Image (cartoon, rainbow, N blue to C red; front, side, top):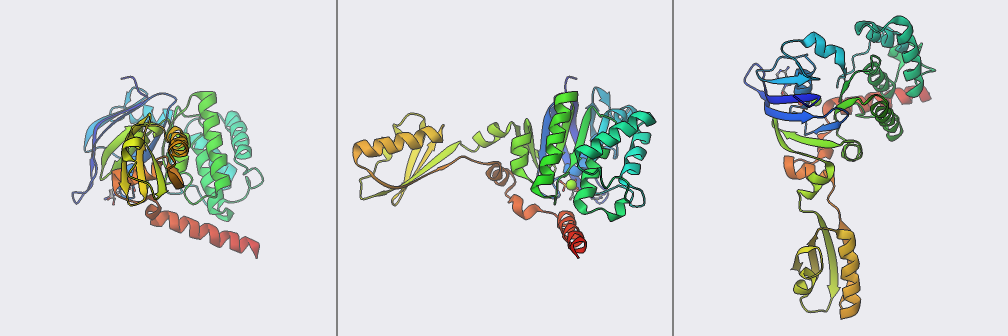
Amino acid sequence: MSGMIEARGLVKEYAGGVRAVDGVDFSVAEGEIFGFLGPNGAGKSTTISMITTLSTPTSGSVFVDGIDVARDPGAVRKVIGLVPQDLTSDDDLSGRENMLLQADLYGVPRREAKERADELLEMIQLHDAADRLVDTYSGGMRKRLEVIEGLIHRPKVLFLDEPTLGLDVQTRKIIWDHILDMRREHGMTVFLTTHYLEEADFLCDRIAIIDGGRIKIVGTPDELKTSLGGDKVYIETEGVDDICDALSRLSGVRSASRDGRTYKIDTEDGDRTIRDVLSAAADNDWHVVNASLNHPSLTEVFLEYTGKNVRDQMGDSSKEEVRRQNLQSRRRQK
Ligand SMILES: Nc1ncnc2c1ncn2[C@@H]1O[C@H](COP(=O)(O)OP(=O)(O)O)[C@@H](O)[C@H]1O
Ligand SMILES: [Mg+2]
């Protein structure tokens, strides 16, 4: 059992026969940032709830830091932090009080808890609001508070379920920078779900794409993109004979095809191919009027493996979150 998280044949069937998680296997190494991506209803939150001891698998097993979650959930809880998808802070307490409550639950000594709370509140720029009731916080402030609540006991593994949904770019950056710091300083392992694929691309060492309760592919962001067949170069020509053969002989080119005046070139290295094509065009008098390069993105990977566009996947809860934030910022402006 080498990984920090080891899931084997994990299944969750809810009453009524919904198989929310349908035989999931994966392994997350210590210190790794592992992204769990998938459309709404894919089974991401259900998987997290089983790993974090909040629900019991129908079958299969999961180990965290070598501890069997089914055997010793109490020991697992001590090494994990969870930032759940739904907001859970107590509205009738201040931000600081929520932090200290959380620290208490994990048995962090008072003095240490106070120091860490201060440090984290400062880091996430909630210091000025620390002693206000959470009831007065905006959606973004609440979300930031939730993230640092999950960190107060310095967990070995942090689970983040859509931690940045509905937050502005700046706030998202603050949160991720801090999480990267924690990883650097404490070797923390991070398991996250997000709808922001660019974030996942930039943050995650490896990503699993899940749909219908099953993992479709696991790999580094680059491996996932390469699985789609790599880069594509498109050129548009004017008045030349078919140049498919010449194009496919260029170094690194896998194939070239033609549709009217447009050629599509599949290649290992798009940057190099586009240079080679333009130089060959100059040598051979091909009249290239347009050239473009497409590096596959995670957006395309997501679409390929789930058949769904991530932009359509902002769930009701996130829309609700955005709406609430907008409403609150409008109220504050008045
Ligand atoms: N408590 C529950 N009871 C019954 N079905 C549930 C429950 N929670 C989630 N589901 C269903 O399980 C599936 C996976 O849900 P979830 O894990 O929340 O997906 P995700 O987090 O990927 O959006 C969905 O079809 C959802 O409706
Ligand atoms: Mg979810």
